[in-house]
Length: 98
Image 1 (cartoon, helix red, strand yellow):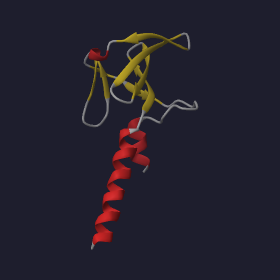
Image 2 (cartoon, rainbow, N blue to C red):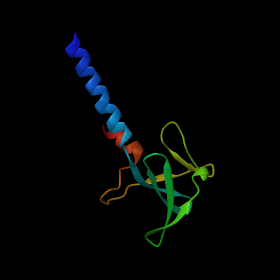
Image 3 (cartoon, rainbow, N blue to C red):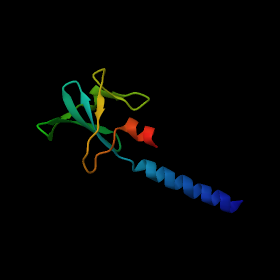
Image 4 (cartoon, rainbow, N blue to C red):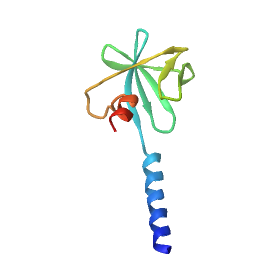
């Protein structure tokens, strides 16, 4: 009984630690803006201009719905598949393929 409790506790600890270190990094198209969404403890939003991270956008202009969809000033943004080291798949695609 004690062994089972100990193993359960260790498993919960690993899950909590993994969730705490999860980082999201993907790109979305919001109207005419291409935006890099980066999150670890909160999110930052950078507009991409001429292929470079150029301008930080205010986080208060963005929101997420229950499905993880991103909205910028009330309009839905669309995730863009991006082939680059360190960039995640679109959040919705990640859940559908697992």
